[in-house]
Image (cartoon, rainbow, N blue to C red; front, side, top):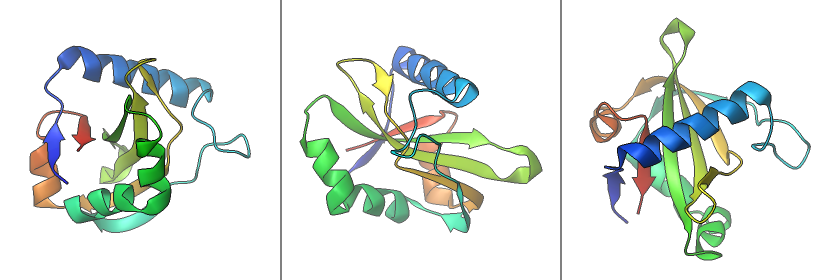
Length: 126
């Protein structure tokens, strides 16, 4: 499994716009109980953690269910110096970000993961 940064600015902009609307309006990205999952507070998150998450049977099964689905990690800086990492799926057919599978409030993003993000706010996991 290889991790790459999305090169398409339009896809990133569209995804972040959709994701911003989802968070702001509280619509679309809801779990089965009708609410956003609570962020999991962790000290450090790395590439192995992100790739490992999408390798789990339940996440991998969602990816295999449609060739139009991509595993993505999105990064948002929070107040207080923490970073919110959202692990979710993006549907290329509908150009929509699906409900978050996991939210991590991270104190420290490891160097390798930070380098992959670079100046982008979204990674595609392949």
